[in-house]
Structures are given as structure tokens and as C-alpha cells.
Image (cartoon, rainbow, N blue to C red; front, top):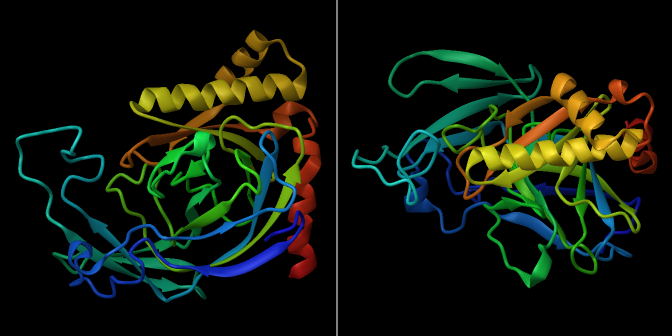
Length: 307
């Protein structure tokens, strides 16, 4: 059980359940389970209609390597079960990345040449969610209104994720650490790695949150999940426009106009059972609006007190 304001430290295994150890370990041969998560955690006092705030205090790769892969029938640039094509499926292939925490880089190594390049280390959690509404049981690979496999690179240390509570206790679960991931996760797999996770939770009572939202020190983001991608885009934009109107007191069309000129949008994933998009706006534009009673600032202060 977690109490509001409590800090949790744990380790989350990678999406391959730790079974892919070398480039020769094909996930289809060595993995029994994909995308395991830590939890669920019962959050004391959480009730349907509340909002759970999950602040990521620290994310640290638990190993000095990470793995990525291509799969047949998975990813944005290949046929899938629901997008049938006549061309042969992609080859299953694994890439191993070196993770250098001291240099804050991950090293890419091509499989068919000696090409290498260093990329910035940017740890994130791909999957964070609560129990869905209506008594549903959802695979951890599916993103939706309850969170889940959002695969949004912005879920890094220093951010707060807001999730609507659907069941008593919320039942928080998380995992799927990535050492880094490009926007869209185009091949379907980030630089997957086990992750040391430090997070804090809080509750905003009697305030519902319809879709996952993110607050950073300088931005607000709304996340939508759907297929086709344009519907995920619409969900995220609709949620951000209505959120901005609520925070500023603007008329809905005034908020629509403001987001149209000041907002940004990016895909999270274009490979999972539902695609994700996020819509973002700088908080400076909102002229000091208080977001969820200032919970992000309170939880952010925990990091300063701990380190």
C-alpha cells in the first residue's frame, strides 16, 4: 500500500523480462512474457473520480546495456495483423546498446557494418497506468485513458503524470524502462533496459482526469490513445484545449485559438494496439494558472530534499 506523499524506490525489469542478453537472443525464442510491470500498488484513499499524481523523482538504468529489436508484423513500417500486406514480414533482429551513465550516452552499433554513434542517455518509463474503468482487464502493452503503455519520451525524471482513478486504491503499476526512445517509437521498440525507479504519489480528491496528462516545470501535455493516429491527435488536442480553458477561464473557442497558435504535438508510439499522441503548451503562456493545486511543485521539491 502507498500513502499520498510517500516515496517508492524499486527496480522494474525490461520489456523482455530480462531474457534478451545478447544480439543472438531472439525474443520470440527466449521470452515467455513481454512488458512486465511492477505492481499493482493500492494507493490509500484513492477513489473513482479522484486524480492520482505520479511524480518521477529519479530514473536510473539498472544495467550498463540495453536492447532493441525488430519483429515480424510489429512496428510502423511493416505489415501487421490488422494492416495486411503481401510483402514478406520483417526479419527479427536484436541490437545491443552500451549504456554509459558517467558520460550520459547510449552507444548504437549497426549490425551489418562498423557504424557506431553516441546518443544522449534519456531514461524514461514506457508504461505507467492504473486499473481501467468498467472492470476491464487490459494487456500492459495497450495504452488508453487509464495510462498503460503510453511510450511518451516525456515520461522522464522530473515530470508528474496525472491519471484518473477508476477503482478504489487506483492500483498503480509501471515498468518498461527505456534508456532512450525516439518520438513515435517507429520500429516498435526503444532502448529497453531494467530501470531503478524512484517515484512519489499524491491524490487530488474529487477532481477527475479524463485522459493522461503530464506536467513538467515548463509545459503541460495531454495524451490521447486511439487508432487511427488522427483520432489520438484529436483526443490529445481536445483534452488540452478544454484543460487550458479550465485553467485560464477562457471561452472554449478562445482556448482553441490559443492552443492552435502556441501548442505543439508529437507521437508517442505508432506501433502499439493503440497509437499515442501528445499535445503540449508552455505554462508561461497560461499566466500563472495553478495546475491541480500545485501538486507538481510540491512533489518536485521532494527531489531537492533527497539529493
